[in-house]
Image: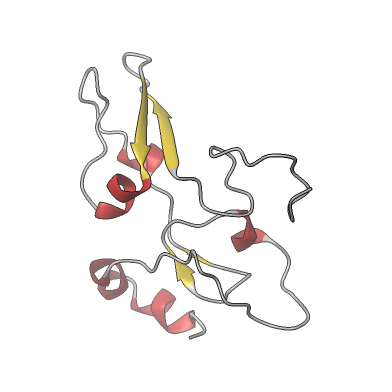
Length: 115
């Protein structure tokens, strides 16, 4: 079995690594729109492919202070909320730093991150 206890990686899961896709069901028309990670972290609006409703708040994850790495992450996985390790912060190859615009708008959060 893999490290997370899974038999096979489910790309929608996101427990041990950030999912490569973010789905969103439009509340207006019910259409499922799937966004790639690059679209989600690019910063633009995430719109329903059928009716054009803005799904950004639903599909873009919030920036978190990761419990695994101690760094801010704009596209986190389940490790971000896992209990802290006794041996301290661990390197994360999949860390997605927030944009400079986000850091400028949230100076308190940026100062709490452990570099």
